[in-house]
Image (cartoon, rainbow over all chains, first blue to last red; front, side, top):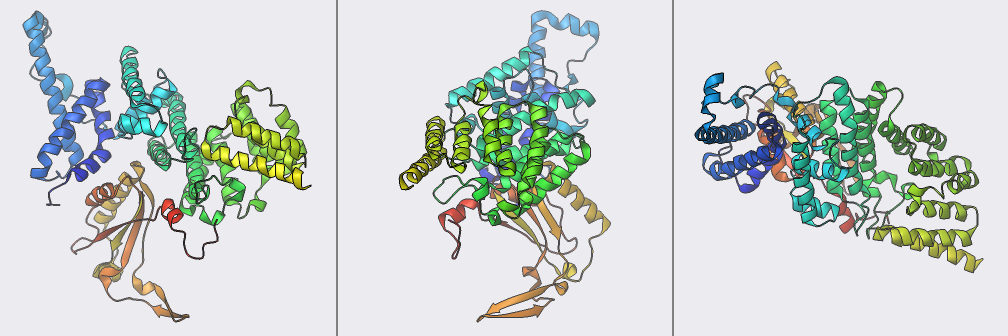
Length: 425
Length: 130
């Protein structure tokens, strides 16, 4: 060490320490906004002092001690105020010492779970999905409201309001700051998984806008998943979720062409799949399978992704196994979207005619009415069956529904290709 | 960003001396911290270069060179692959690493891995990928 730390160095320390610091402060002061303020003040103090003193050997402990001193000061000041307002009698009656606030009591017990505490608070079920996502990225990702807003393509004020409202909701609901144990903890985790996977998917298949993939969100979600997996290692689904994200991420660089256009799974150059992430994904899936019977929805999806990851060429894909995994997934999720994906697998395993029947049964499904992939899949099946006129129409409909520019272009190209076939035939 | 973090070789590592219990415990704890922070993707220690081989590509020929290799300080004794937000973050984690080889000067080198976009901008020569 020894050299003068730059602002970037201090910010890097902050990125490493802030979530743990915040989780610890929340436990002590039992107020999220106050904890955030204290953490910010500690950062400011560090920015002021470290350029002269160097980064301390244990910067996390230094930041915590600084923030706690602030907290104690504030509490003392508040007590003084209270005293001038006549609460001195009650203090005297109970014999509490105003000079040693109870804050110091539980300062250093079990600091290890601060991140788990924080993620459980940020993903508390009293909050809406959007609020949980914003709060998680803010508290655990250390993202600014501006960064979150840009990632989700909404105005910064929207995110800021979501966060303010979320904190108020948590305070009004008197959400406890203890980490639940056993069954209670297990009950709270799906709400966290949902948020992490939402963040991942927002990055992986950005629902709107120009960029098809915003890798930074994917990386943040993966980081959160890996962190969580280390804290609840006996939970099968956390490993399923991590496996799913690792395996999907492994294909990231193969799914975008040189001019930013999406490349479909079966057309991807498999040599470009990231083998490090494939191995990590498969290892996480093994952990999930060892813990679960039957597999939960994340592990099932990961198992499907693993079928692709393990096929050396698209032709070697074990579609029958994928159909079987989708059967199990349909049972656990009851989601029409999953049924749509299952139909695609059926077409690969048993031919387009069998799949088209399944798709046609989904057409009236309200959840899929605005979903561009339904006509897109239907168009694909029709074109395989040689019904190119109908296929052309379906691709056109799909393109009109698609919100992502790149996806729309792909669908229009397919529609055009169908038109070409009729013309040429 | 993904970085490769390399522990450079020393006379002791090249001599095949295994780290003592204390260092192993400290390294184990450091690795555990990296895992818990969600940044450690992979990592291994490497055997001394006496166990290694090199292949020199020269004028269309391939010449096998047996280890050990000279210039110890340019050799790698172990590596990690980390997923971090910035080079600064990687640096900060390296600062927290226990002295990798006690009693001897040692160096750790951090190198960013090429990103997918780097290849999109400049396709590798001979790449058949569209």
